[in-house]
Each structure stands twice: as structure tokens, then as C-alpha cells.
Amino acid sequence: MPNLSKPMIKIDKDVLDNFIEFVNADIQPMDKADFVRILIKYTEFLGQYDANYPYLSLRGKYKRYTAGIMEDESREVLDQRKDFFKQLQSHLRSRLQTIINSVESVTAGEADTLIEMKGSRRVLIDPNNDKFLFGFWPDTVKSDGQLGIEEEKDLADLIFLDYIQTNEFMPSRFGKCGWEKCEGFYYQRTAKERIYCSTRCANASNQSKFLAKQKQKESG
Image (cartoon, helix red, strand yellow):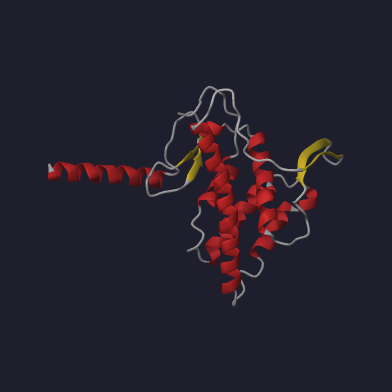
């Protein structure tokens, strides 16, 4: 059961929803429009820290992600880009699964490493907004505009780490959908415990249980 003792700080629901929707998306059967829509969701997740990493132009990632997809003869490009983002999605799903596994197998006094990255910790001075900007620059993340899956995985890790640190996420509140036919992840934003990733899955699971009971009664 999730640890509910720690008070929650306010989490931007839209950003969290964008992240979870990308992680849970069934990318392969998507048409161009739906695939582009899910890339927008992911880019918005990255773009929340654009000010921290100005040289990465995170909000400009969308153009690189969608380049060539909407052209008339773009089936090959679309398939290649889907494969690319399925790999990235799988990477993020593995991070969430690691969190869940660690919580379920916790040993008193021990802390598990989620991500380890080599790079530089930097503090920037932003005189225009009169503030300091704090960030970590992985050695493998560059700004050359080229798409490479390993670099994108590192970038996803970078933003994910910033995200869970900024919002003080609790490991015990990450979960995997309780409906047997779903592999979706979720984050429990409030103290109200949940076991499904969506209302649709909750309804489907309850309906399945109801039908199973009805069948058992009829056979009995």
C-alpha cells in the first residue's frame, strides 16, 4: 500500500497526464494524426525544463521528431519514427517498473539506484529573469539536432529525474494497472488509493469480475 504520510505538493496535472499518456500509448497502430499528437504530448513533457537547458532547445524537438512524417510518401519514415519512439517508450516504462519493483521488494536501510549518469552539474545566471538556473548536463546529451536513440534515452532520463525531484514524487505512488489485460502505468496524485490506470480499465475489470461471478453462479 502506498505511503500516505508525506504531504503532497501540487503537481501540474497536464504535464503528468502528458507523460503517462506517452508511456502508456499503443504506438504501433496509430495513424499519422494520432502519432503526431502523442509526440506533441512528449515534447511538452520535455519542454517544461526548456529554460534550464537553453542549448538543447527542448521545445524545438517537436520539429525533429515529426520531420517527414506528414509528407505524402512518408510510410517508411512513419514506421521508422514509430520504432524509434517505441524504444524510447520502452526505456521509460523500464524506469517506472524499476521504481515499482524496488518499492515492492524494499529492504530496511537500503536504497536502490534508479539512474546513474555522468556529466556536469551547472548553475547558470539568468539576469533577464533575475534568477539562478540549476541543472545537470549528461556527457552524452548534445544539441546537434540529430536523432539518436541512446542520446534520446539519456535526455528522457535527464528530464524525468528533474521532474520527479522538482515535484517530490513518492516512489510508492507509482503503480501498474490492476486490470489483467492492461500494462499501463499511473501515478497516484492524491491520498485516495488507486489500482487502475484509467476509469476505462476500472470499469472493464469490474465488468469482467461481475461476468465471472455470474458464470460461476450459473454453473453452480
